[in-house]
Image (cartoon, rainbow, N blue to C red; front, side):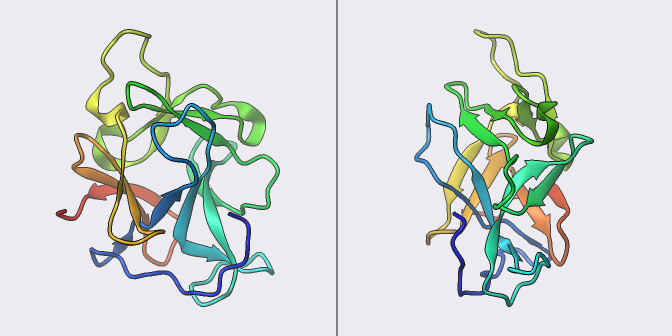
Amino acid sequence: YNQALSTSPSQSPTPGHRSNWDIFEPLPSPSPFIIANFDNYICPDGERGEGCSGFVSILSYDQNGDLILADPRNDDNPKFFYNADKTLTVEGGPGGHEDGKCLWSDGGTYPRFKDCPDAGTTPDADLVWDYFRVGTLYNGQLRSNGGTKCLVTLQGTDDLAMRDCPPT
């Protein structure tokens, strides 16, 4: 995941936001994995740019617990587990203060973390995630809310949000 890439990111299926994600482990996975974004490249000088031959961004979080795209060369990037109930649990990360929490689409608006459901209970739809690959490698979608909301980067920014998924 941290090798230099020489291609520009692909275009989003929906104008205005992009959702090109890849997971470096087949799902479901009992192993921790990283979630990479192929829309926001980090250039070797640390700047972000669509045209550079740089590194993909990794899904992480900041000291406030807000999801961000991080440099894959950071030592403290979190890993994720895909659980049998289709929740995504975070392991590690900056300061470890979200460790053990679940990725949550917060009503289909913004991605956040919250406590995972108790074992044996059915998680709410905004805690359930599916990974859907659209055609080619590096063009996957992370879907929640019954497959209706996709985790996206807002075009031209590092901001993450949940938006309606394009039709399949």
